[in-house]
Length: 84
Image 1: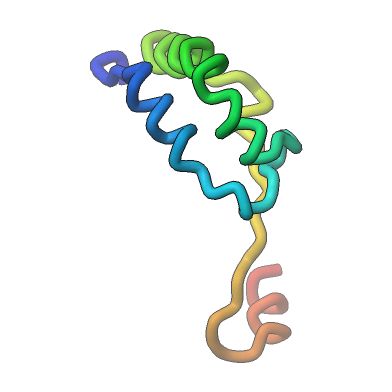
Image 2: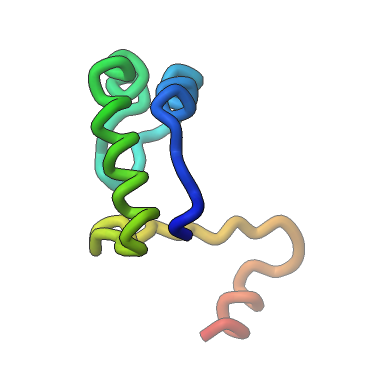
């Protein structure tokens, strides 16, 4: 992954395009706060992302995720039994 590079302008663009009506992520930071502070935090996020890509290291808290299955078809109960 050392050949990947995240640009500051790309980070800034993504922050500005956040939908403020979405729920907060696992870190509890609201999308409104991220969007409104985009100019202030873009440089720091840009450096964090690039350092992680260059070193191949990811902080422990970035390796965790909240995963919620979304059942689109079939019997939800049956699927839960099958996966346990």
